[in-house]
Length: 111
Image (cartoon, rainbow, N blue to C red; front, side):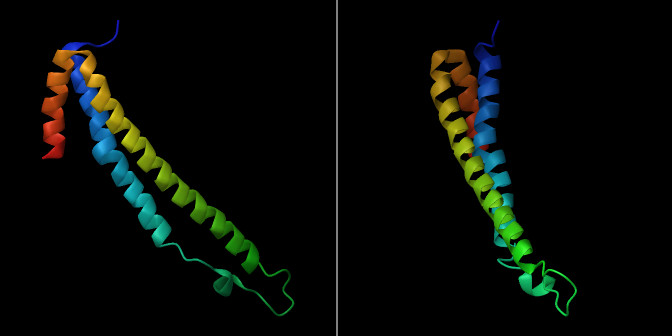
């Protein structure tokens, strides 16, 4: 059987905290990583003088993919965080004891 009452409210409170604090913090880390990644590295990885193919353009292409993945991950984390907050806010209305416990936990998070 599923959780009800205070136990359910506590779990919903945990979901709310994940969406309100934890995942936005992780998203901030991804944003910092994205912001601190250079736009190009071809200058520092170029190789000349007949030593074979210049890896610079390939490294730039790889960096572009890494930057896009980092940016997209940040965006997805923020979307999931918002969805968790909405879910917690809506779900508590199914059980008054759960709502009471959730309200208590939400107050702690929002202080």
